[in-house]
Length: 194
Image (cartoon, rainbow, N blue to C red; front, side, top):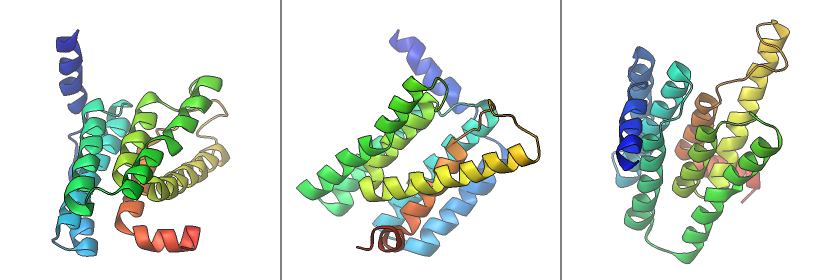
């Protein structure tokens, strides 16, 4: 069983490489270092953005969010929390709330309305919550879901999709989470007035 799962983890990664991945990976690296500089925060953010791009590209290419990428985001969040921010109780609480604040409601909606969200999208939001904390996770999810909703309306207007059609959500979530990671302080000020 363990061998089957580990081979699935590797197999899922084969859906990532594509020209789109390499282009957006380069953009992600540039943005992380341009906005945050060549610092520990910049390096962690660059790695986070690369993993988000990998999840988005895998979803675009094959309709999956690779478990290994999601696991790496969670591990990166724990390492970043300890190494850069230093272990604090408020920080720990923020990250634990971030782990559940979007993923659990998505799971509940998905259980009530079959196919509302994919399991990969739910796991992506949980792991991103460990990395970002609850405020930025909430803001990133809001941005991603809002833009995906606009895209869905656009598809409906052009009659390229029906009411039962599905949208690959990971690229939109990755975009929202990337904005939250890069411009977190500004987003907090705009959204929460803190």
